[in-house]
Every structure is written in structure tokens, then in C-alpha cells.
Length: 217
Image (cartoon, rainbow, N blue to C red):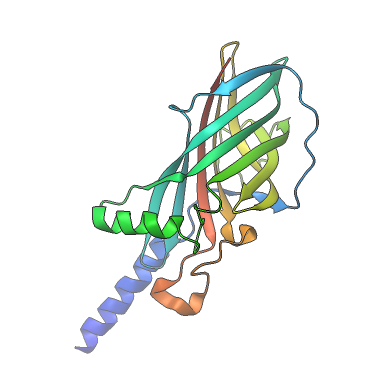
């Protein structure tokens, strides 16, 4: 009996170790920033190809999902991104869990006031304030990132300035942006389950965000 208890404890510790925060660059977060006036040609977001993904973790596992863009555009001048804004349809949130019934319940919970409160805040947004060529390579995880994007992320009515590395490809016809970074959800008032005393019910504050944005001229 004692051996079984020790084995269970070891497995629990191992599982917890496997479900740490997703390995990604941490976005720098601070006060909202002022967006400079952008100039250039406008590229409209391809709503079918563009997607926002997310991963949340807890000691006993993780959940992954996606959200779609509602609208968006990028401004480009002389092969440089000068601005842009994207609206995210929070109501489109989906989970990729294999447990269909559990996935359905999770979507309902994420849409509730405990998390995004979709009825009151159906849309989130990200506004680019500036884009800098190059990245800080110190400890960089996204090795193919070639730009640093700075902007204001609004979730649940709270706006914070963030910056993160991204891979941006610009052509005459399109702009494609890929990024993968972590944010602390509590900075936007998403604090549900953020108490380690909850043990197996504890939900880590760090959430991974993946961006794949395609915009066409």
C-alpha cells in the first residue's frame, strides 16, 4: 500500500513537471502606449487564414484552443509595418481537447464572467503602436523572429502595453506575421483559479498566445 502511495506521488510530481508554463518568450507588459500616426498602404486581414491560439496549464494537464479574428488591417510603408489593429472574436473561442463533453463545458466556462465574460466583452483587440526591425537575442526562444512588435492588448476592458518577438514577411501582395509568446492573464483581471492553494484545481496565470496573421493588399 505504501509503495502504491509513493508511486502515485511520484507520478503526480512528474506530471506536474511536464505541465509547466509553455516554453515561449515572455511578452514584456506595461502601461498602455500611445500609437503614432501610421502611413502607407493598407493590407486587410484574411479572416479565414488568420488565427489566434492559446494554451493554459494546470498541475494535472493543459488545455489548448483557438479564437478567430473579427476584423483587422496592417499599414505598410516602404517594406515596413507602420501600424495596424485587430479585433478578436472572443465568442469564437474553441478548445482542442479530445474530451468532447469536457471541451463543451470548458468553452462555456471560458465565456462566463469567471474568465472572458463574453456577454459583456465579446471582442478583444490589439493595436500596433510600433514595429522595430530586429530582436533581443538574449534567451530568445523564437529563433526565426526578425521583428519586435509593440502594441496595446485589450482584454475584458483592460488595456496593457505589450511587446514580443515575431516573424514578419512582407511582399507587394501580403503581410504574414507569426508569433508565439506568454502573457500573465492576471494583468488583464483574468484571475480565476490563480491560487496555488487550490492544488490540482490551480490554473497557472501564464497563458501562451500564438498568432498567425495573414493580411492581403
